[in-house]
Image (tube, rainbow, N blue to C red; front, side):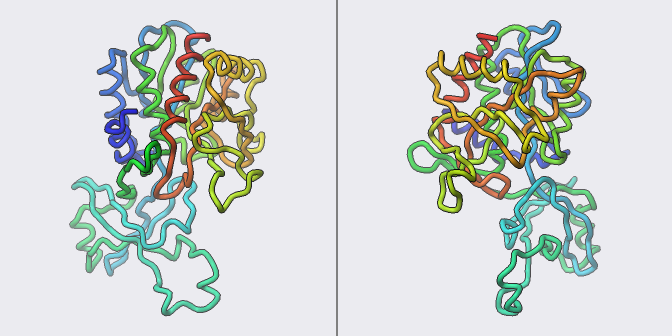
Length: 342
């Protein structure tokens, strides 16, 4: 596995609506691999070898969860909203980076210390609306002089690291792992197949970028290359999330409790047959909450067969996540065969 490339992808800043840094990296890497690549009006990166009517699309969303500046008070503190589904428990006292026109500004998410909390406060999760960002300013005027404005996105400075012999941790593995997989597919890409880095997946019930691009491109099928919730740690029971690191990519049969995509049966069966032929172990997943870009594509243009093929990942939608190298490599192996067979 190319850990240097994965580190670049993980540490790039790309909160939903601000995916430009990730898109630029993806565009450059696709072109290095000999593909025609462009960025469309919605910020999606679209790459292909040759293109004709009704392509197969493999899409991986480039955006990550984060925050956005909502208000600057006169003491120099920032209030914020959440961009994407972030667990409030993971925000308290985290280091952050505020993205401004003058560059990245470091800060800290502040909260009331436990010394002065009431007993009932200690027993409950702190609502993010009670939190604030401290960037070391002493007034609202100083904040504005530093370049901070309403609408600036905020991300986390988590460093990408290798763990043990085959594990990795980092920011935005959901879904820079999927972006990495697309780049690894690029050099042996078949004709009339599109590799697409999509935008704004995290900020709607179903992803926005994948929907707009797929409507225009009219694919014959869509595969969301994303991450799935790994349940192989002490806080979860097997029936909560029966997906495990190191046991292969997941085939997502149902998303968002059937409110999202229900994979078309012939499409799903073909994927499973290809996995068997490729000798790749896969895990089956039915998701009650959450969805991939497949859920935003399946019902446009009269219906497009769509499915998620995902990489098991621990602790997604927080400031750090953990994944296994073997699952990434097997995801690539499976998708190479899928593209060849379809």
